[in-house]
Length: 312
Image (cartoon, rainbow, N blue to C red):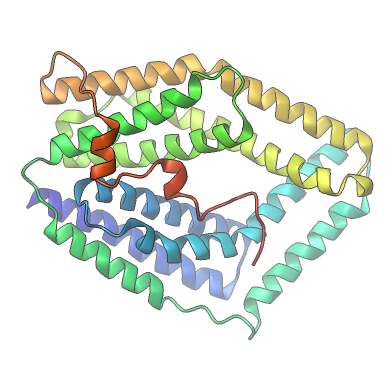
């Protein structure tokens, strides 16, 4: 019963926080509120993924769909503000001023005004229906082999991470996936520490994992800025464009340089799982078993969230 209670309690906090932030967003759709609201939805969708590992009948894609759609639709304000901040800092550094950055300010205000207009009618019914299904899944979740199922889930994440970091020249898509996986891993390990205290990892593990998430987040902001600037490079000074591209390459190299550290973290996590299950040898999870349990890759689980698209 402790596991069921803890899962409900965890979800209660996320749900209450979501509705508080949603009300704040409706009153004033500022960038920081949008950011916190999107962070909350990331936490919920990470939770749904782990819950699917524990209760295999959970309709994961169906539950994530309304969150993913809302997540994407409100992201434009935040993404515009990030781009404005990066470009403004770059222009100050280069002692240049462009009309494009001023236009971004106008676009941000225009987007906020649109969300406050009568044209927007946001219904939370799909999200409420999804949360009802989550609660039902928690109640019917089998408790007899929760450790084994959590172990399988995290072994699966370890393999996903290691497949990416074995590449010395990862693509932007691979780094994007790595960012998502490490964030999901961080959030769900924190919850696992509450479910199974014996599985607790060191503070340094979480500090390092958090630092890596921040590093990947900085790269992502740079990459998105370059991606958008390339489409508008005729309106931006060439020095600024070249400087942004150079900084994105530097950020990417820092991440690749951190790959051994990421591997060490997966090894520490693996050892913690071995200790938890009192096993001398690693557990090998055949791909077929994941297919039978309807596991999805992280990329597929987040297929509806494409941060490279900025549409209402």
